[in-house]
Length: 277
Image 1 (spheres, rainbow, N blue to C red):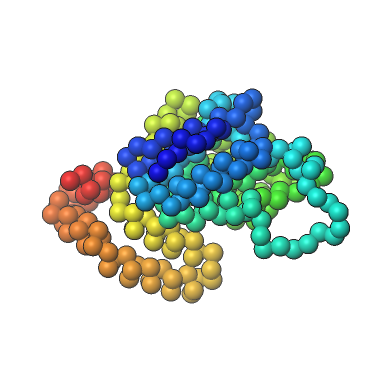
Image 2 (image 1 turned 45 degrees about the vertical axis):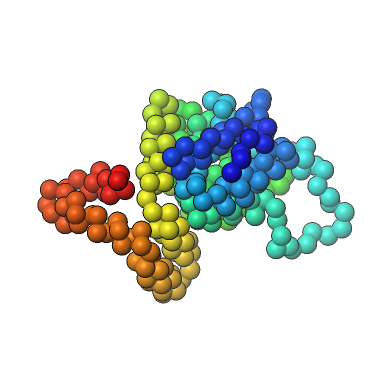
């Protein structure tokens, strides 16, 4: 696929990993044009069978995405009563990153707030930098509330009380606290985050794509009641073992010494060798 027609995203594809770098000076405000490109990229990369992992990061060391453009919000129509609607373009964009059949990783090296924070909450994994990453939901101080999924995703990630502290307090959350609360998977030092996120993305991209997609779908079922989730998991497991890629990988695992003491003690590095050939 051709990813050259973007102005505010710099996109590179390598070894099954698509890396999109937000470059919207001066502070990466999510203007309507940036929102449009993020939504279009989500649709395009989600359908790209050559991509198996997606990394979103920023060209600005101080700002990942500042927040959604407040001047654009002031232009939203307010005539008439508020209505409930099942159609919301921002929600649809975030859901696309959450549900696409490939891993999505957010590499948050600077400040992220508002709609930018809501976008990364929809990613499968989030990584930050100690002393540099700052997370903020700044809507309530402006008299509104997070309308891009923040009131729904944040409690699921950190719990109700902590979500309310972030949302109602409009506080800045540092990387170490965000990691401890579960909002970040991990907080790294500035000189290691790039290599660590890239290594994980490439590792995932090297595995059978059907297994990644089905595993991600099964984890999503954890939001169901446990009994239903277990049924879903069992069905998806049955689907996965019917893939020829799974049959090959399991046979290769045994050929390489799987289930022996020596190999099992080094299982993390060993399993990556299954797909070297």
